[in-house]
Amino acid sequence: MKLMIASDIHGSAYYCRRLLQAYEKEQADKLLLLGDILYHGPRNDLPREYAPKQVITMLNDISGEILCVRGNCDTEVDQMVLDFPILADYCILYHHSTMIFATHGHHFNESSLPKLKEGDILLHGHTHIPACSQHGHYTYLNPGSVSIPKEDSPNSYLILEDGAFLWKTLEGTVWKEYAMK
Image 1: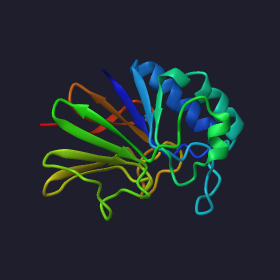
Image 2: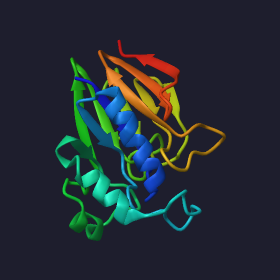
Image 3: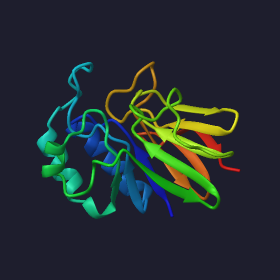
């Protein structure tokens, strides 16, 4: 299974459209969204082409292919207009015996770890900064942000396929890779 992982669309129709074009080009089986889908939040400037209603339509068109966790900017009101579940604080995926704990990052993060065992992966967005860092017993991964990247990082997403994570720009250029053991 090929999984595309993205975070922090923040209501940008422009970047949602580009993400979905990349999703189609990647021919991924599912799109995992790590929260902050429609609202830009009070700390962020408006992203390019801020149009949450257009984002709703684009994502609802592929609702059967989306897995999602709730971000700090996502609410029950957002769930009323989206045709896929968005209110779970996390989801757990497995690749062989490796658990991937996927969350937004505002509750569970490197300062507030979930229960992880040796070799598990903590995957979250929220910071808008791509990351891949190995710690004592777990690995932390972050796809960065689709629409409002920070610290001079590109607008990016992750691909998980055959045990490897690939960080890609929205143009599809691979700029980092991590292989699970």
